[in-house]
Image (cartoon, rainbow, N blue to C red):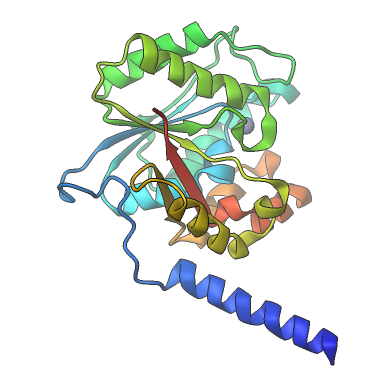
Length: 255
Ligand SMILES: [Zn+2]
């Protein structure tokens, strides 16, 4: 009887979480405050092909569905296993699923920015590349990893510091930058249940400093991730199914 009650309670919370994510009427205000009709050019800066689908899918779906223009800058082809050219093509296919125009996607293959845990990426070089993209596309907003980079991969952290260096050294000052908040392992694998913690987290901080973006099109995210065929193995399928990053992105303003 006790077990039945526990299972029933979990089911009720699950239904409430799904409802909150997919059907609640609360309007997120990210990039919508002031003049909601003003569309922004947003640059998503990632380290490897599949980062965009594994971690940033709610953000991409939020931005494209509200008419903002999304550019993706991927700093490497993800060639640590020698599959760089395959993974580059997979990223373009994932962007089609995400409704990001392909001429707005750039994948670099710089000898100094190769995928790998032992590879240290120069923050100055990253900042120069980001600067070129920002000026080339008249970017208003940058979105990237935080310093931990969700999975703790050093390339993710370096991308974060590259963005920070650009903001510190050469940003014209009117560019907003946001980082994807890394969460603890329990929250990370709690899927839709994380909505309650994510909301609490946003409420605990001053208004406008954090935004919780909910994935209104999770099917699109699975479709995008499935385009990364070389990476779409059982444990990643499990990760994407149970990861709260598939359903929720909490963005924190980089000050
Ligand atoms: Zn990565």
